[in-house]
Image (cartoon, rainbow, N blue to C red; front, side, top):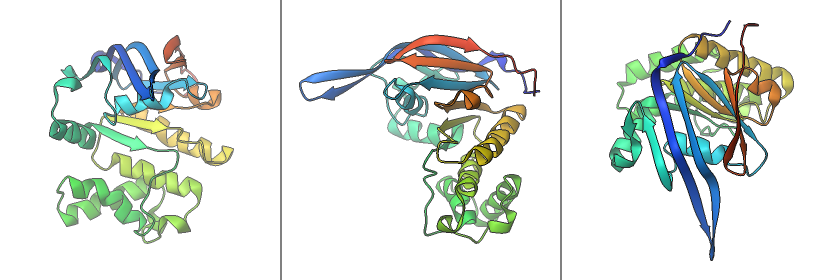
Length: 239
């Protein structure tokens, strides 16, 4: 069974959040009045058709983009009041990112890709190597440490991406279509890793268009044209 979310410990709060993009003489409203609260250890899936605002919402949550209006609080702190350096530190320390296209550096090894976030944290080389090796083993890649991304399968690349996302021990994992480029069997294996992270206490927000993937979550938010159409709670008794 998945760990139950700690609703008493608020990690993320969005209040009437909007995001607009200027397009010539007009404005596209990507997000329109989004409000929800996410507790520590919660597992949230975001679903919606293409153009519904899923990826925009995930980018705002990860402080990769800023809202136009409304409030976004991370552990009670309004990100709008943060400096660029503070936002950068927030992204490095509080969030881990998993992308559909993996976003690995093809010229360096599995071990070195996992070490990238630790380099930016100023981690000592020996400790960085130990941590990266431990994470590679954790996702089942101890036999691929010296390989480069082009030598790996899609599932192995996504495992590297998950290990890299965990390098700085973030509390929140943000995953954009984590199984989108994978076959069904490999997708199931990746979701099992994410499920295990929730059991260990991580908070996960994932964007997906697949209902079977969303059903791993505690809760599903359905977006339509930048608005929350439905906020659905799921029971997780089968795990």
